[in-house]
Image 1 (spheres, rainbow, N blue to C red):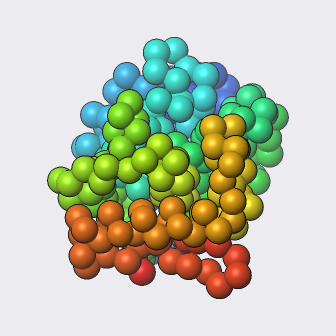
Image 2 (cartoon, rainbow, N blue to C red):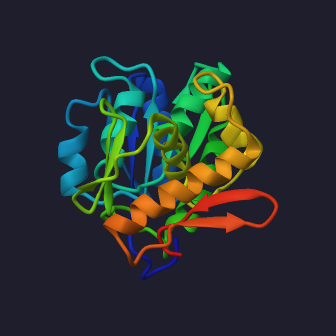
Length: 230
């Protein structure tokens, strides 16, 4: 890190002391300031006190698991989140992304590769939505609804699931096929053209709550991208 560059803090939530120590050393060697937690009991309190450039998050933890913690983080911050986990099932990966994770790395892993992913995520995030940028929305997971600038969007279950996936990875283009796949288990009769109609409804509901925003961009012949900076 060059002189004069602001220090970047990275939070590691990992209950394996050897893995936590490994990333603490790697992060420090590359100029980051690491903070390590063995569980998530103090996570939200720490996030409110300190801005982080990235969070490394284990899935299996004592107390709230990583998926629950990811949900909590996303109510407060758009900080890049990388899951580190031994859970390799596709359903777990999809759940992680739907809840707002930016990357999902399975154990065993290369620490150098994880560091490269962290650098890439931080580069993407800086200048767009900062490490602890305030979000205009919050997510009611139990009610499966979004509250946008104080207004409940009153989404259908299908619309909620679509928007939840889009906001999980800001800036990423989701193809219509990927959006369809994310709905397959619950909504088997959705077509490509129906996806377009549901996205139109989501835009309309967001616009009613926040007329100045245009956060769901169409990518011609591909799909859709969520981008608050658009």
